[in-house]
Image 1: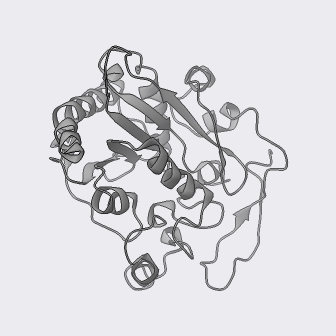
Image 2: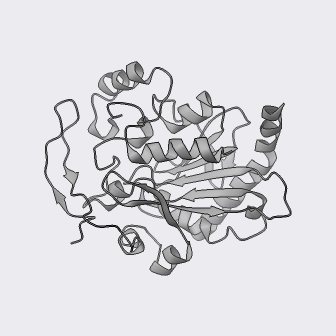
Length: 287
């Protein structure tokens, strides 16, 4: 068993939920596709390697590289919209990463080349590669509760304790962007300055949305239905606090991929929604 998936029990501090943490990786990871493909439904080794993802320069808490691909817009398009596409913030939502790899296969087509892309299919590799895939990262933090929303220090711990009853799967951490994975997303938003963020999750089978533009009505079979606003969530931080629209795609199953036709339909509906709705807000923001 590789160091990536080998676990040893250690007790966390008494202020954090009881959870085992994985052993750190002892040397730099050069073959990231082999362990990832073993966990991702309908993704082959060639699918991963053909995606051309590369280390972003930041690692997970356990030392696995956060992988990213930058895809330029058609050079004939001036001031192309920037799209940040994220998968796998929660490691036990395997389809949320797998579908992003599938979409990268068609990003060379004209409809996708209208936009400039930054794609990170596996934001939480430690959670994905745990012996049993887990929602949190290797330090037991729910990355989607770790973003610096207003009043985080009061609201996030209170929500975790009272509303979730200190659910260890939803522990927000001890401070905002305390984790290398959430810090990478935060820094990427600051540097890349996306016009829209697409974050893929599972398994609620709906679309969620936060931000200043018209929400999508449907992508494929997924219908718009607000899931909620949470302290420390990416939608709250980016969509409500920074006015960068965030579409949260909740696939219907965390381990079983949608049919190929549905994967394509979600993709095409998403591109169409961005084209119709995001430019208007981008122009307003420039005034």
